[in-house]
View 1 (cartoon, rainbow, N blue to C red):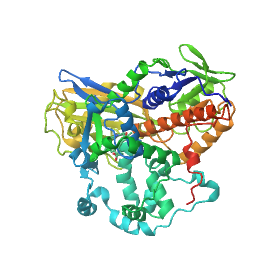
View 2: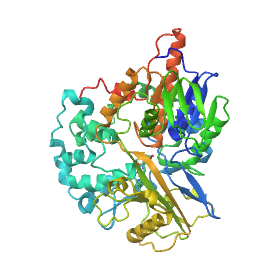
View 3: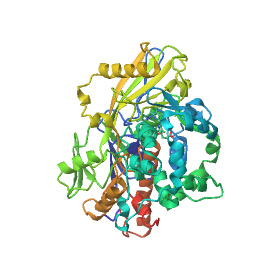
View 4: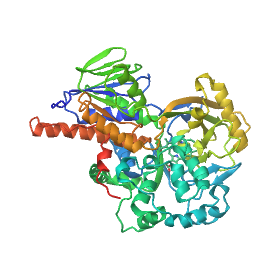
Length: 541
Ligand SMILES: C=Cc1c2[nH]c(c1C)Cc1[nH]c(c(CCC(=O)O)c1C)Cc1[nH]c(c(C)c1CCC(=O)O)Cc1[nH]c(c(C)c1C=C)C2
């Protein structure tokens, strides 16, 4: 375990997690520190990809299209946006806008508008096919006993979201509404994903209050400051600091539910990239995947050229990729890195030269696992032009849609996407919007992108596995104090989660160095990036 602060960090992966990690290191590490960011693709940003097409320069998002300002992670991203001086490009969407309020589920053969208010809920709870059975389910929910917890498997106390919702409400809601929601965030299978890691609010509501409704009632009392999801000391301090430092900004984003930038989400990537490129501390290597990561006598990464003399590696690449490069170097194996898969999503952007082509307005719709005749594995469709028309000043009358297909279905049905042409994928997307939205016109612009392995799937037991991984890194002298991990494979798939986790990791690494100087070389704490498992250690349910 090294006792001196690292002089040379290698950051693996140039997606939003790698960029954020390198950016906070650049700002906080001592001046003599060297940071090498290595990305396999020629372009940085991972699945954040914005492209303008055609004479009208129509903006297409091929990855995340909006960010959310809420919660600590939302605040962390906003804080970074201010530091990057991106506020002049900021485009907010208010909570009262139809793109924020109106969301639909396609079930079984029509769009069901989800209730966005209490009064809306009163009618839709009784009439929508997708919400059938929800009233009796909710009435009995407070009386459903809490799932028994065995002391010896506390870390692995978990079940699938489907099992949780079926047990506490009913299986119709799990099959339909919840499976659709899971398509809209994880493109995943509701029967495989962990409730504890993907919907911690549900998990902790049961653990703490014995019922979801009771937890909601307790939280609706404004005087109650209790957090349902446990918040770490580090998060509490960060929350206080960020609120204190960004009072003006917080006032200005009040009432905003989502936002992007004039030139799309990729503006965030470009702003970070420019600052990194201008720093003497940072070297960016792109177009070269790390093939081998060795922790033998010294750390080496081997891609096009070999890099020696690295003191600390921060891996932000998918955990199963980390496993592959460690395996090649015959370093001792770390557990669970390749347990969770990641899914591939086919993203098809379509632009039509007519303003009123859609039967409804809103954010878009999702397709649950139970919708019949879903032959092209549709997950959902976003109505992009409803949300931020300011991004298309030269094409004010264009209607833009993004069709998302595949996800877990590609794996479940052994679909080899490598063999599918863009034309085939485009034609599947057009068939889908024709059958669901009755759109038969040909798009004036279309873009197809297969986002390979873009969303990690936190399968049941993820929390327990991460705890074992944390302990394995800490207790292995090859890795302890030399390897940390962050990124979407571990604690949250959203841009906000990636930013917050990268920031916290760098804060922990650098405050460690500071402590070290104070004590003139005392033992440095081992930071793995998975410290969240220690934060939950002392909670009693
Ligand atoms: C149809 C497929 C998908 C849609 N978006 C995504 C997929 C796979 C990806 C995605 N969506 C969300 C996240 C995480 C958080 C983030 O970065 O903002 C990811 C990776 C956010 C999200 N989208 C929907 C919900 C309910 C959420 C959670 C947060 C929130 O409440 O906003 C719903 C939703 N997603 C899509 C559609 C068409 C849709 C609703 C109609 C597209």
